[in-house]
Image (tube, rainbow, N blue to C red; front, side, top):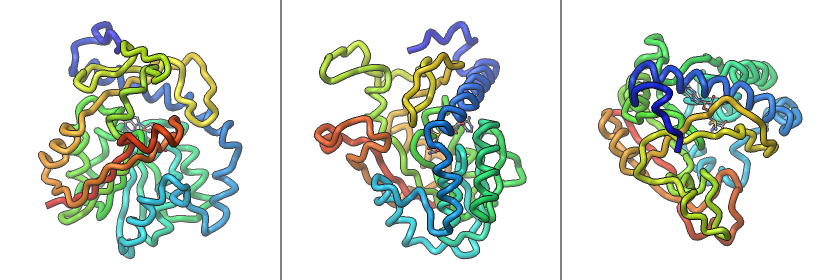
Length: 281
Ligand SMILES: C[S@@+](CC[C@H](N)C(=O)[O-])C[C@H]1O[C@@H](n2cnc3c(N)ncnc32)[C@H](O)[C@@H]1O
């Protein structure tokens, strides 16, 4: 846990601003490492109209759900969208238009490059998710939220208030996310070492941070601007959705480790991911 007092008063606007600016810098830097590790595979992949990141093995559960949705004529969004790979893949289910929102300048500029290659009707906006413009109020039929997204937001009620504002009535969200259980291990806990002091508390709302960078593709460690993230209990996730007028339709937990950090022996026994579908009332 970070001693957050040096950043200001917990929950204050001033502190949130520092958190988001540091996260933007951390993600801008991480993007270059990701690009190096991925070695243009997305640029090459999206030249093929059949290419989709949802064809990865660990996405099969969400791919099957997406195939059942009629996207024709629909406006969709991905928040946050990183470099657009998932939004561009979503567009291939037949949506009319797509908008991706992300705080990172570098991720958005890569997304724009990939959109040109993929030739999909998608555009990308560099913004804090909590400050998405009124232009998009009541705009979307479908919003996708995927792994590694909710942890960047200090307060989920704020995040789902925005999501609810952007949805049309009866618009739907799909969340395919890392399970809070997986975040227990995000601060260096290892089963073999039993270093329980490194377990992330499920109940501690204060911020955690990644100091060695965010290169989860190439696994290069580097000195990074602080990437602040927050543990959110499953109850907090569910209540924040419901509290903002969005009705949960499906909720399932899975053993799939979306980052491949655990071997199958461990991954089969724990809830490492979950999927929620919900509709705005
Ligand atoms: C792990 S990625 C998740 C997106 C997607 N699942 C992926 O794997 O590409 C996290 C993204 O959240 C973005 N992000 C972090 N804080 C944000 C904020 N406050 N508003 C918008 N985007 C944010 C980062 O820039 C990064 O692109």
